Length: 391
Ligand SMILES: NC(=O)c1ccc[n+]([C@@H]2O[C@H](COP(=O)([O-])OP(=O)(O)OC[C@H]3O[C@@H](n4cnc5c(N)ncnc54)[C@H](OP(=O)(O)O)[C@@H]3O)[C@@H](O)[C@H]2O)c1
Image (cartoon, rainbow, N blue to C red):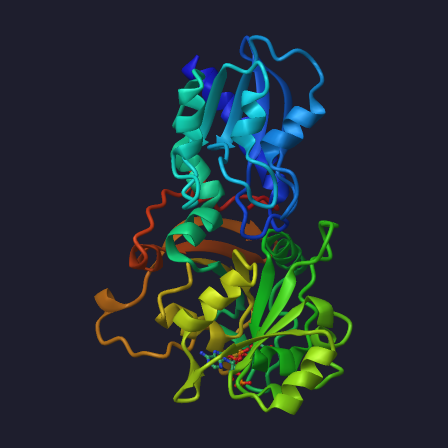
C-alpha cells in the first residue's frame, strides 16, 4: 500500500509541474481521486489566482465519491484567500480519507487544514514523499521561509571562464541545444532578471520561444542609471507591460513618470554607496509577485548575488570557445583569501548538450543562510550522457 501511495503521489507531482512559471508565489499543487488503489481523476493548480487543485478536481469529477480517497501534494488550505477554503469544499463531499505529501508552511495554514479534517472525523495520512515534494516546490517553500524569491542563474562560459569578449560580444558562445534548454529554464520561472549592461549591450527580449506557455515570464532590469536605457530597447517597448525596472528611490520624478507611462513597472530601492542592497530589493520583488527568478547575467549581477549568498541554483553551459580575455562570469563584490572560505555550489547534475556541457549546481550556503532545509531530488544524478532536454 505504501508503495502504491508513493506511486500515486509521484503521478501528482508530475501534474503539479504544469503550474511552473504560471502560479507565481503560489505553490505547485496537484490533487487526485483514488479508489481501491486506482487513480480516477487528477487536476492541478494552473494559474495564480485560479482554482486550487482540490476545487478544480472536485469540479471536474462527476461520479460518486463514496469510498474514494483524496490525494493532494500539499495540505488543503483552511483560509479564504483569492479562492474559498479547500477543506470546506472537501467536507461537503463523501470523502473520508485524505493523503497529502507535505504540511503547508503558509502562516495561515501550518497544520490547521489537517486539524480541521481530523476534527470532522476524516482519516489523514501525511507525510508521503515529503522531501521529493520539497524539491519540486522548492521556490514556494523557500519563499515562505525567507520571504525572498528563489533565485537561479544561467550563464554560458568560454573554456577560460568568460561570458563575453572585451568588446561585449557574446552571441553565441553556446550551441543550439543549450540555447533551446535556456528557453525551457525561462518557461519555469516568473521572471528573467538581467543587469543593465546586458540590456544596453544585447537588447534581449528574454522570452520563452520554445514551450508555447500561456504567458511570457516577466523581465526585470537592475540599473542605477535608468536614463541610460533607450526607449527603443525591446524590454522598454514591445515588452514594456511585462518589464519591471529596479531604480533608485531618488529617481528624478519626470524620468520615473516617463518610464511608467511607457508601461513598465518601477520597483524603487535605496542606494548605499551607489549600490542596491539585495536584502532590500529582493523582498520587494517577492511582494511584487516574483516567487522564482532566473538571472541571465551578466557577470556583475550574478557575482553580486553570489557575494550576498542569495543565489540558490546555477545553470552553467561550458562552451568550446577560448576568448583569452573578456567579461568575467561572476565578479564577486568581496574577496576570498582561503579556498575553504569561498562560496561553494554543490554539483547536482551534468549533461552533454551538443558541443557544450551543462552543469547544474546548488548553493548550500544560501539555503543555510535562511535556515532552509532541502534535499535534492533523488533522481538528480551526475550524468554525462547523450543529449536531452529534461531538467
Ligand atoms: N554568456 C552569457 O551567458 C551572458 C549572459 C548575460 C550577459 N552576457 C554578457 O555580459 C555582458 C554584461 O555583463 P556585465 O557583467 O558587464 O554587466 P551586467 O551584470 O549585465 O550589468 C551590470 C549592471 O547592473 C546593475 N547592477 C547590478 N548589480 C547591481 C547592484 N547591486 N546595485 C546597483 N546596480 C547593479 C548596474 O547597472 P547600471 O550601470 O545601470 O547602474 C551594473 O552596472 C554583456 O556583454 C553581455 O553580452 C553574457
